[in-house]
Length: 361
Image (cartoon, rainbow, N blue to C red; front, side, top):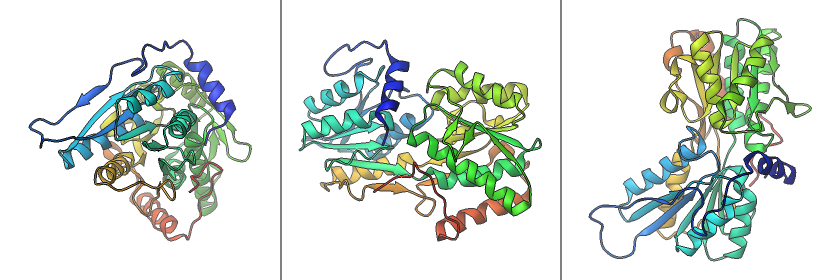
């Protein structure tokens, strides 16, 4: 799902991490074993994070929540995770869990696609799963999300909320799990312009050329702030960062200066960040439910199929926009109704949302 070039860029930005051991790099696995137990062998579900770490307030946090919910639903499941400090850790950490005889090994994020594919091909009897990628290997269960659909709603909403007539978005890296949000956002703004006869501009992303603003990082908050400061300087008053933890630099600045508002992504920002007052909504990727369902099926003895895998959409609640929270009274009722209608129209196929980065089955 990601290009070799993208892998090289990622390698460059995360270079410097040390491989510390065959079983786990960066940090030792964290176990959450069940007290009391039921005797006999437990089903082990083991997760490898990408470099964003378990507390990224984004997709790693979401995936771990899914494992925790699966464990809560089935007391015969035990869970653990290991956090990758550098891209070089991915394959080592995955292989470490193979050696520990984990029943289910989950890789999180498109950046882990190549390493997961290699580990799965080397261990064809091992059940793997991955979030945000489809390596196309029989023993890897892909969980992907058509976030362009919910981001389309968010783009329409941002256009309707903008006072300057300019909205912005930026990404962490130019890889499909990132640009899919940006494509949907841009198209939602375009749909608003067509419906209202307006000319709200999108700064930071050009869908036609697939060029835009990127932090080249998913962790450094100062990089996120730097990019969003540039968008604000150009007039944007609603910004959607798609950059993991780097985006927290944007949300913190928005809350501190009150000059602009933010649309968060992946996990409801009012539950995952300290900056709810600055957030209009979140483009939610329902990773917890997808992971929970996959783990429970695997623990129940079901072989998870690479095809068709799972693709989250507005129709199956795999993607959505979060409640407006602190902005609830600030979003006009007619705009809320229009955003809701867009969801229904997309789910029904009346509106077709397209992106080069959309998941393939």
